[in-house]
Image (cartoon, rainbow, N blue to C red; front, side):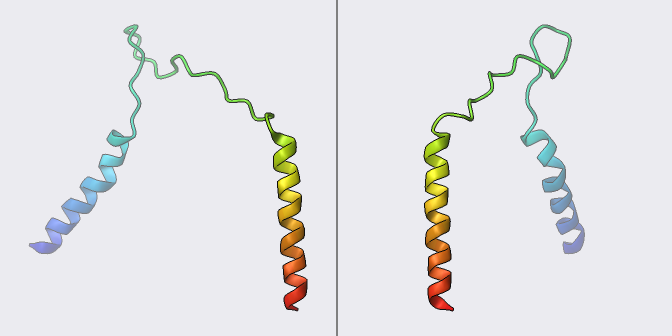
Length: 69
């Protein structure tokens, strides 16, 4: 009996994933899920700063690795 309960519980959690993360459709009655999406986020702001920080981090890690060896 406990194994059947565990199976039901596992099935419930696996199948509830579809309902929990579902997004509502549009309100125009067509039922389409391809609605008004928010505008895309810009990627290029502060990209130079991220590049410099990445290079500094890589240099420090290589220096640390060579010191240990």
